[in-house]
Image 1 (cartoon, one colour):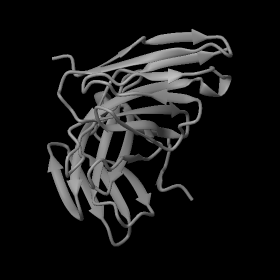
Image 2 (cartoon, one colour):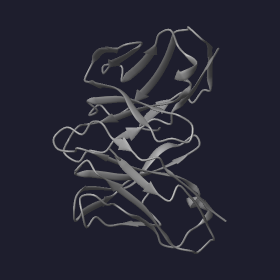
Image 3 (cartoon, helix red, strand yellow):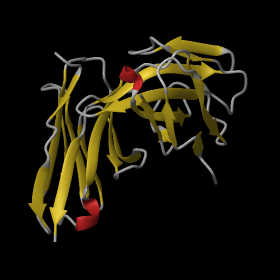
Length: 112
Length: 114
């Protein structure tokens, strides 16, 4: 079993739809949860960061963490064609020098 | 503000050749790392460094060497290229410290080994 699992998609939705992206993980030591967005032929860039369980909202994006279920989600409201990208979840236990563990990414296409 | 700069952007190597992928950051970050990205595999950690003079292996270190003589630079060396090393390579840096959060990535190096 991989440490972080993520549905690879691809996921195609019409413009304006609500998108739900999810990751599950097995390591209970993870405390820091991140979502990265990666456009084609570019490096990943940080989209959202959450510590421990709970929700965090930033504009059209909401990140949710449920540590009891080892499950994290990213919701995109009013999706736009510019949201078309690969979304990677990443996690860390947060210790000094602690590495990130990335999910394989979900490819999202928002159709106009 | 350059951030993380990787060179070259593209490279084709013959099996058995060696080369160095360059990575430089101008954010004074302690922590630097190299990942490879393959379809369906996500980002896999090759080597990382928590500061100048300190390096360690990640998940997939075989066939790669690193060194960290300065805070700014973290080159990745392929000793004898193999077709299995065909991939997109990303260098990343982050503040490190007690909480290791946002990683800043370079634009990637697309390597093909024939």
